[in-house]
Amino acid sequence: MRLFAERSIVLILLAVALSQPGCLTHHLHSRSAASTDPRLLSYSPQAAAKEELTRASALEKAGDDACVDAYFQACSLLWPATDATYNEALSRLLSASQRFGRLDPSRGLVLHDGCVVPIVLHGFPWSAQDFQRLHCVPTKHEPLLNRRYACHGSGLPLVVERCRNSSDPLEARFFPEKSFFAATAVLLFSESTEPALVTSGSASAAVLEFYNPLHIRSISSEGETPLSLDLSAPLALTLEAAPRTYLAGFIEPGTATTTTARLNVLEPYQPGKVPVLLVHGLFSDPLSWADMINDLRAEPGFCERYQL
Image (cartoon, rainbow, N blue to C red; front, side, top):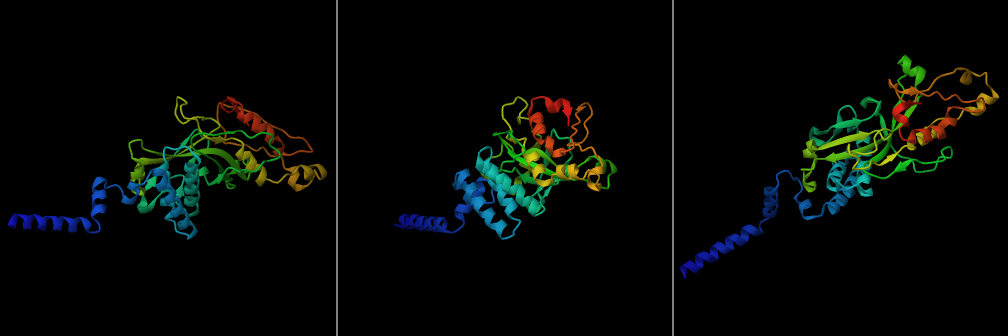
């Protein structure tokens, strides 16, 4: 009888202990100290990512820069997916990090507690300081471009905007007021990191890479992973931002705005490439070459040998 009573007491104490709040949480934390949100372990990565996107969107609307970390978490949960949901999460991450001053091309993507995701550039004649503003690729049709050169693959196609440094005499002489160039962004996570356990505290497992699609068409050197790209998008934004001057130059060729001849470069000078100079006529302007530039830069091997 005494033995039965002792066993009953033990069972009662065990039942009380298991019913206390925090026991399950403690058990999950013991499985992985890296996880700051044990709730996510019971979901699929895709379902958890959708929750993070919803939470991040609400934070961004409220003006809370914590949305940057939530978007980063969503990207980690979706990796290594290459579908539209991953690109949407990455697009929102880059947009929010720009808005809240958390993206420094020279330093990296800054997360909470000072964690920094490093940025690596591949194949650009531009430096990290030239990545001044990132734009989504335009979706509307540009009448001056007869073809759109783009393809689906891994990563998020973007357009990078760079403003001329007018205090530099060389830039003032040769660079347009704004330069637009193509880039493809890929937020990579370590293959050894379990997606559901990647948090902003483990930013060392991630790297934000930008590829120049004019020279690089796949992520791996063997060409196993095609790169998503849009070669025509920078020209579309250039045409949208720059005013046409062909009519003024034709009607009033002696005005101050048309008498100063200048040579505009589309990229910094790259030794070893053959310069190709395009000269427009009287009833024309530099933007008249947009369609030809669009075709030439999409031609395989052209950008490796020539510079417009």
